[in-house]
Image (tube, rainbow over all chains, first blue to last red; front, side, top):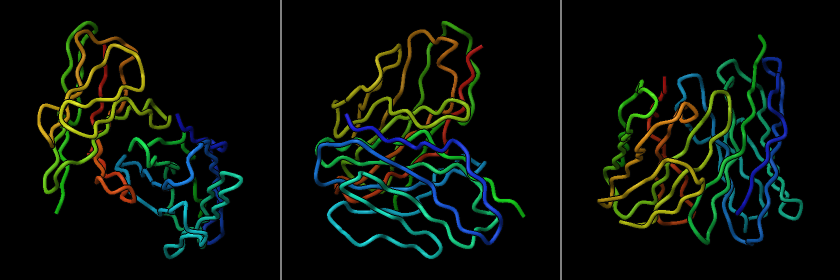
Length: 114
Length: 113
């Protein structure tokens, strides 16, 4: 089964600065989808950004962008101009094209300092 | 539009009691359905997923089970709860098309005492 690893349990960033959250995954598939989710204190899961494995272009959504390195199986999230509302748990997720399951990493707790 | 309902929101159960958490999806057909557990301050552990009625894939051998009696209904059960079953349980659905993300319910906070 595929595994998703987030090696940073906690990260901190100053307001208006940039922070990068790391994610690596293990798979033998060539086609799959990757996602970043945000979980604020309300615990509602919110999709931040998605990436198709067959696309070389990195996905961007306003202040959020990814660095997708398929050969390295790396999928990092960059948050620019960090805001206090960005403070949350961030989860990296992998969706298989073979069996439809969706696996998450252990999460990174992001703190934004004013 | 599609919606997902999960209940109850909180539950306190004694050790050894049964469990039934229910999740229903509206506004879509043939969704993929998932049950995840999140221990305190931890990541999401995939427990079960289903691609159709009666089709359940189990990821973690334990005293929990799942059933999908109807296309848009997913139930998480236990005959006898353990203390270690405490956690935050999330139901999610995704479309059959592979590029869709998972949409999550509000979650159930289960405390086994």
